[in-house]
Length: 498
Image 1 (cartoon, rainbow, N blue to C red):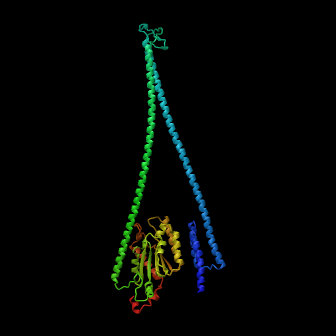
Image 2: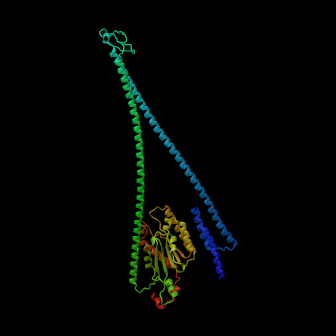
Image 3: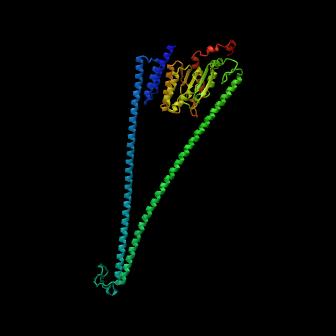
């Protein structure tokens, strides 16, 4: 007895080292797979940690993976620093580009304003020249009217010369005669001064109107920019409201899908209940064990043993791919087998294994269909750890693993299908390492036998028939069950009846 305890203590020590190594999470996927394969290869050895070489081997093994983890953490830190520097460089470059673009845009605006002002100056100068020419022509007209008509000899063809402002006027006559300067009256000078003041006032009014127009243009431009900013704010508000409405619409769609899923589950439960009712009507004398404590009138221990080991128990545990699979398995297995199903949709392997009963009351056969949800949640490491822990726990139940189906809606080289391939490879490796584990390959079930477009995927009728036959073969290939000695304790009549 002490020797057996000593061996158990050694195995626990070695298993503790292996669990500590397995709990290390390396940053590289290939290193994690190599670590898992090394643990799978070293676990069946059951090394004695009291021996110096074995202890040294286990310590070096653990130190190796610890050093690898530290180096990978350092590499992750360097990568994070490099990514931070790249982000800072990218942001600085974008800021510089935006500043250069703003400068170029402002420069283009300034050039346009400069051209506009130069054109305005040219127009104003042109208007000034026009006003000066008009003023000069009016002065000449007034001076020409002030010369007396008697001093002009039109018949002889003389030219009349105005010596006041040195302006000359050519006539059609051939003779040119120079007359004396005629003084301009004060009334004409006053009249010309008034006209000049009027022209100057008109020029000032024109300049003032131009200034007012420029101010009005600037004010209108400012109002336009303000309205544009308000329109942008309203647009942002509308976009936010649109995003919130789209989020609410997605939530409503998810809730609607959940209601549809609950409807499908309720229909499945109703069909299961109807099948059980029909089965109870077909076999009214069939013995049914109550789920509660044993009835009075016999030994409670013996009644409990009959309830647990009276017939070989088969438990189908898994995700939505177990839909209506228990009926197929129950119809294919001999009548001595009791088949139950526990389907938990959208549940990873850790949740499925936590629902198992204690070791003393576990069924003899556990058919496990899992992996699709773990792949969707990217929980491959957790899946391997939980499944390996179940195999190393020394369970007395026979374990049948069903291959996780591929997602045919995605290409074969997608991340989901690649992860599914690695998961199936790990389960196949477990079936080779442990004698109580068997693996069912579902490659004979094609895409047409799987309903993938529903809210919860499941196998069709043909797929369930083929998979049920494979499960039956695996269960019968294990040979005689543990419950045979208990069955022999019945009387001859009871054995014949069963």
